[in-house]
Image (cartoon, rainbow, N blue to C red; front, top):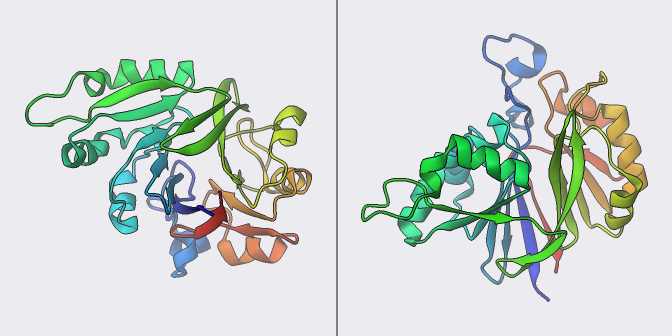
Length: 258
């Protein structure tokens, strides 16, 4: 049986952690679990597939740390800077692979990307001096780089963005609600990675208690909380987590059958 590994490249919110010029306990912590770069993931299979979810502003450092050897495709949740603005660092992979990289997103996300990073969607030049990307629309279910990918619409404030299930691993970041229909399609997961911004309610993200409630309804074998601000200290939040819920950290890896 083939296996799929997800590596958490980053589990932090838009400011990362530590936050610039902040002297809170989390930002001053020496615990590696409190060092959070922007939210992103890398999926790799033992068949050689390699897919990234989002390329935020920390993507170069994340790719170096994880030693990502190649990229077959990138799945984009939405075009906020902390999920997109590392797109230029895909150039290194295009240069090495001498090939364009397919990038998948909903219509809104792809239009935003093609407007802001128009040069990345041109034909390759001799020197591969720019990222060369090919926009690909998301389908509800499709095969990407040999992996089964399902895409779901979820609300991120006023935006409709994308969440993903790849095999029995799901990545749901930057959302403030999950419909009953999507919850039904997320049953039977081995691992769920779920948005959890902070304790207080926020118009475009889940709070801790909301994340706990959705984790219970989705009922994955293991849920990990992601996209956390510095207001959530790793060990304190771990002590509050219910059974089969834990706090993610940069570099965490999980493996599931395909």
